[in-house]
Image (tube, rainbow, N blue to C red):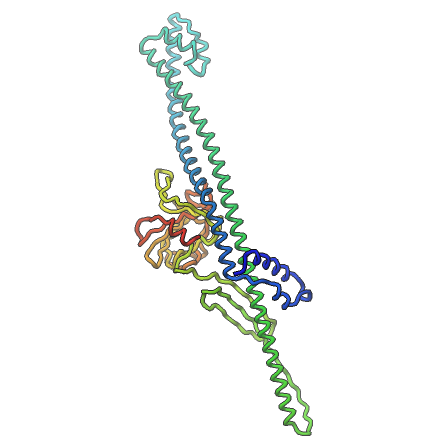
Length: 425
């Protein structure tokens, strides 16, 4: 297999040659200068993309932990807000009780700085509270003590709430930055791989066009040779009598559509011959069938880590693996089988239950959309399109990803990490 660097140079060379006018470069010169891009080159480019994507695994783990911490802080903020609300209601009542006590003492002749009491936001300020305790009875002392304790608790709760809010905002920013970093790198990796695919497709188109040109030239050469032989034969058998002859030759041109299947695929070439017109050739490269009857469920750059049984909201444990990819990345059938259930709603958002021919079931969640026309009961071959990556359902505030579950034999969810590693790396 040629070195990748040489093939990259070949892509640029091919692109430059295609842009030149026909008179500036002959086809023979093009063939001499263009280095062929092989299927092995494409496989190497894909492997490089997938390996680079997996180097993001630590970043994904940090992102997931930040999400968990941020969710925990949100829960804490909610609990603190409830506590604070209850404390505020109780404080209002206790403060009114304290003011009632102060009024009663004032009416009996006690000078407690009543104006300060009524103007104060807190009744535990010194010397106000000291004066109240000095002149209050036992029951009043207990009420004032409750007020003093609750005021202290309220201040502590307010401080905890403010601190947690700052921490939550910091974590939310960290989540956003990590999300942007991951998706940006995956998008760049996939874009580089697609450049290789486009260059390979263009190369195959040029090759098919050249083969068609040679075929037509050979047909023309054979036709002219046959005409020359026929003319020579006529001359050899002709008499001295001159006969005027008019010969009309009709040439049938061909329009050919070629589907190229890389090595390992079935024959996918179809040819259509149409009388008249110029010769037109269209070449489409079909991805090779996955080996072993299974393929990666994400057909593009993706990254993940082992998050099986990681904590989730509501005390749940994660029952699958989250494969992060750019929004709109194709999601395909991991093996041949039929579509079980389709649903749009709930925690999973847009989902697909897929029943493999092996008897295993697979769950795809948080899709951006289903494949056009997808319906329950549809037979989908391995690698067939099911939908695209998104973040619907309870993932709407997270990075786009596929939540993927594996249910061997249609039973309980099993850890899919090793299987995904073997299929997607």
